[in-house]
Image (cartoon, rainbow, N blue to C red):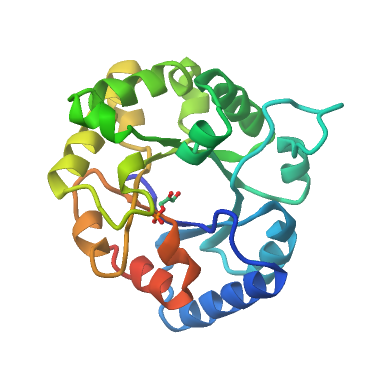
Length: 254
Ligand code: 13P
């Protein structure tokens, strides 16, 4: 069975004070209703990784993630943060290939593969994000689009590397819009991703990978999304900035 995971993506929000307060409030709510079977991951901005990690220390079912890393391993790359640096402060997970990075910062599938490889070399599990635009969906190209994103990047890994991934499907048109993908849309895509992994690797590998859905997940729609067969959790943006809402989402998964 894939691990159940609810991950928060704070994106570029919060200063140090509000990051500490959000973490404190999250841990306070969690102490009342911690579902130990669900892994909670907080993907926080680089400057607060250490502080938030220290605050979460000792809570086994909570991990802290970075939102990105460099596609280079080290050297004269001003402003970049390497996978090795993240590993040296005990970060175990990192988002990679989020649509905002692909669209705003022009990240290509090849860059994403480089990042995934560096993360794996540094014993950090990549949370690989994929998703289609509204145009691709309207043209009926959404399944092909996701397949292409995977073939050009993570399907180049061997099985022993691939099994360390978490995959998050986030349709771009559902991110931050309040428009969640329908249950049928999510079901179709998650089955598709599971089948692609099966045909590229094996059934047992496919059935072990956690597939998360992201895009306008809120406390009032989380349960019906998490009840979909091939959904093993969520990647939560806006609603993760409110500790109570985030905990309500965590508690919506069975
Ligand atoms: P929202 O939950 O705000 O739609 O964001 C989803 C997301 O991009 C998480 O990575």
